[in-house]
Length: 215
Image (cartoon, rainbow, N blue to C red):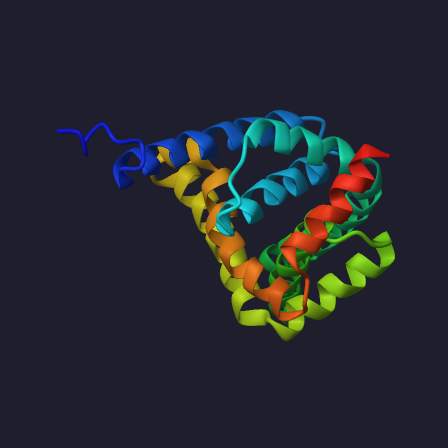
């Protein structure tokens, strides 16, 4: 009986994590409502889930707000630029679906491939904004290079997020209660491997973040 009520019991730990994912999802959605702040909200989400995936769990709400405020100024212009690029690719894709010509069919294939790459680079950019202190230009360039060179894990992480959203919208709506929190956590395990591959030590980055947020 004592093991059942032990807080270290895997069952209770799983339930606790689900609650954290729910809270993170609510915070992310609320902070994304103005749309232009969605980039900073997702960056804050990844800031927390990358820590959780590295067994550096803390108080998720203070960590989220700290990261949201600290990244808002830098991430927002980059997010708007990425949204515009995504809108152009989305229009090209819709034209390919509805055009009914050989050119439209070719456009559908090309724009579909570009959208997949775009999704991988977009999420990688948010991860880097969450974990790396650098200029916006350098982070975006690094995100593109890292997404291409690590396409399989980056694509897998993109699919995890996409699958949760689609399943929640069209198959089983309760999944949305832990989306994007849970898929961000699952994909963060893949992103941490990529970051470590390039020598982005979590401990060193944390020290830089603490100093930058405090200034």
